[in-house]
Amino acid sequence: MSEPTHDAPPSNIVWGVVTDILFWSKIKGGLQRTGYPLRRIRTALELMETLKNETPSVIIVDMGNDAMNAFAVIQTLKEDEEYRSIPILAFCNHDDVAAFTRARTLGADKVVTNGVFSMSMDDLVTELVQGNDDDEL
Image (cartoon, one colour):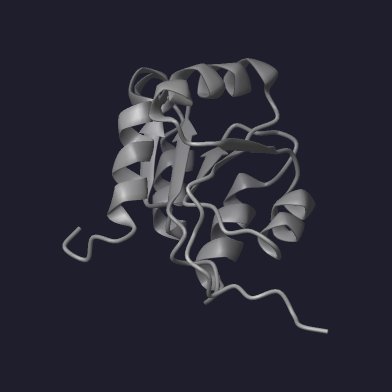
């Protein structure tokens, strides 16, 4: 029996590590025009289990997610050789400078405020998806 392989190229699916239904609705609406399929991930365990079988092109992380430790999610992914190349787009409150700084320090590829995320999520995600194959960025 063969083991799942993780060296397959990422799919074009975008994962949202989001428990807040309002933010999830915003993400679905904001990314609809990009055409990228979406998957909602609710827990860190679900994230790691799903990664065993599928590789997303971008993971969106809500730093204000009280249901899981978003910092641990970023750190775990960026420290793991198999997953560190998956771009992470993190968003947080504009006044949470500590979360902004810590997410960036842990390796999130793009960290923005909730407002910037809401207004520009399609552009941000498209940039990260297209940047997967662009060695110049």
